[in-house]
Image (cartoon, rainbow, N blue to C red; front, side):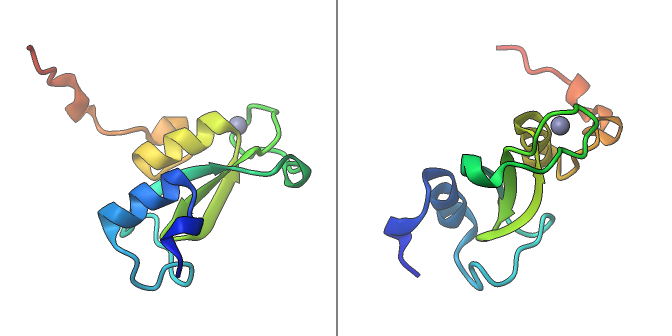
Amino acid sequence: MDLNKLAPAALRAAMKGGTAAWGQIGSASEHVRYSQALPKIKARRRCSCGCGNKATHIGMANGVGLTRGCELSIQRWVKTGSKSATQAAPAAASTKESA
Ligand SMILES: [Zn+2]
């Protein structure tokens, strides 16, 4: 594979998680998740998160597209591995670091 052809977000994920089986096997739980904007011509499907918008972004892992949705739902998926707001990250985030 040619690293120069990767989008910046993909490149960052490749640097972090490695490129073994890149583009062949993608796992939301085992690989570094990242998002990519869909070309406008491909963004015609409805997002499934309930926002009513079109699916403009694709959730990727290891060079494989795993899920599609609006920008927000894909951002959430990248962060938590889930597109659903009700299954958000555990309450561990309540321990704030004070500078
Ligand atoms: Zn949505």
